[in-house]
Length: 362
Image (tube, rainbow, N blue to C red; front, side, top):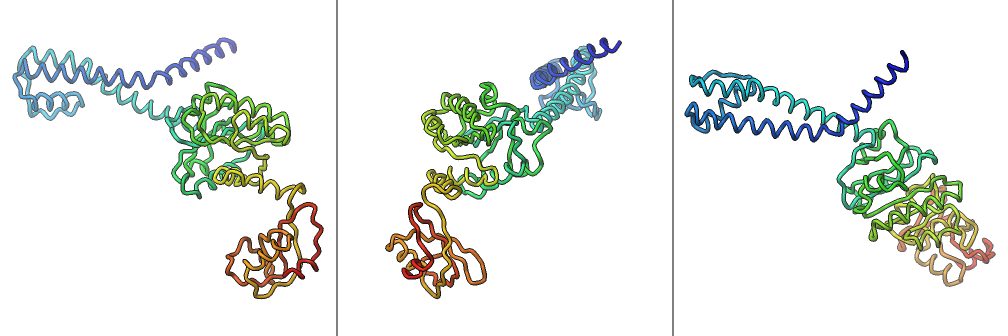
């Protein structure tokens, strides 16, 4: 008995899928039938009942919608037969069916859009590709999209996420930002086609697992497929192992950046100013240049003069200072006369500089 009920359930589900797939076609067909019936009855009233075009249309509409004002009477028996056969037996049914098909189509469309099954007709849009295995939380996407919205060129840009992270629908917080999604994977050709990857202007490929260097192989596969379809898009990819950077760049990546889940803004900054990702990554490592704090007192000194003195003495580049009340101020105006108890300076790795040496330069 259980097997029989399960079999009936499967048949019903398969039938439901077919019905949803054909809803748009059914609506169009019903509408066409309705138009044909409308035209035929209007022509019949003009010919058999000798009504004007306006009266014929009025009579057809009032009868079809079952309003029936009764201001125009049909006394010709052939005209009555035409009304019975065309409208009573056909038109009223098709009007109800057309309305039902339309509302079913709209409901199905909204459902598929919510579940990530709808193919959006997008062009010059932004596509973000991520894998469900990395368990990227909605806050990451929110900050990433918010950063895009703060840049003038992307304030109105369409943004679509290709992911399996949201099987139960996109969170309201993302939908309010104008984001849509499609459930799928970046290495599936049909899913890339579904998000119109060939029409995208910016594509971001997130690492499958931000802590696993094997993810670079998956990224390479996705990147290769994308570049084969879209030759002009600006593509940014996450690279877990620096050894694979050149390989990804040769495959078509314009920007390669380490996965930093806490700072999605880095990707947007790299896209808006290519090259700055290297500078930002340098901030998180002890290789090459590094940032140092020098506890020196500065009183009423123009920032431009301070920066110049440090660079002329080959100390480094001042990027920020700490005011006497502890506030950190980055990149002030060159004309500002600053009061500081410490400086943040970018120095080369091979430089060993003391607070006294910096104070002597100033």
